[in-house]
Image (cartoon, rainbow, N blue to C red; front, side, top):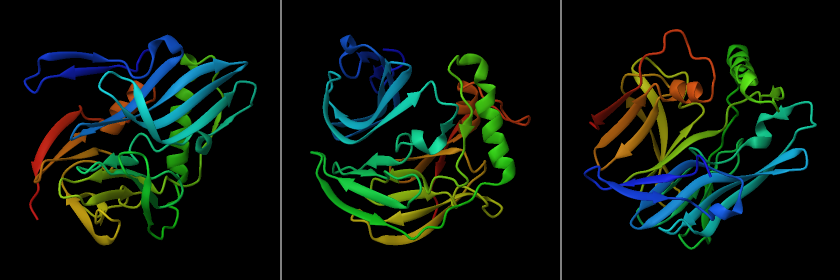
Length: 274
C-alpha cells in the first residue's frame, strides 16, 4: 500500500506504531497527501488508486478515519480516470482540494475549497453535514508565459520515469485558492493566487481572514524572509512555522528540475508580532 502509511510518534519522539488507512487487502495503491488531527478528530486527504482496462482510476477523498485506519465517512471526493490511450491530459481534470485547500477547526468544522477556479469554501460538521458556504469575488490570476513554460518543462522532466507519460495541457490561470489554515482562535485564513505572488518587498504572502462562520474580516500580510511558494503553518497562538524551499523540495521529489539558485530546505519558527 506504499506510500499510504502513517508513522505515529509520542510527543518525545518515541515510536508509537503505524497506521495503514483503509483495508490493505483491497489492493491498489493508497496515496496520502495530507493529515489533520484536532481534539480526537482525524481527517486524511489522499486517493485510492487502482488499474482498469488501459486506464488508471484515482478516487480522491477527504475523509474521517478511526485510529485503527478504517475510513468512517467522506466529506468530499472525486473520481479521476486516466485513459492511457488518450493523446494528452488536462491539468484541471486531475484537480482536487488536497493538498492545501482544506483544514479542520478546534470544534471539528471541516473547511474545504472544492473548486479550482472559484473562491468558494464549504464548511462541514464533523459528522459530514454541510453547515454553510462562503465565497469572495475573484478574478483569475493568469499565469505568465514563463510560468507555463516552467510547468511544461517540469512535467516533461518526469517522462523517463513513466511509461504511460502523456503531454499535459496546463490551465492559463492559477487555482483561486492555494491554502486554507484555521487558527486556534477559530479564524479561517485563506491564501489565494494573488496573495502568493507579486508581493511588495519584505512580504512573504498575504492572507484573507474570515470568522469561523465565514464573514470576511481583513487581509493580513506576513512579513518574513523567503519566497512566495514557501509553505506556512500556524502553530499555537503566536507562532508560525515556515518551510523555506518547500516547493522546490516537492518538485525534486517528483523528479522535476529545480532552480539553479535553490537554497537548502529550512524549517524556521517565527513569533507573530502584530
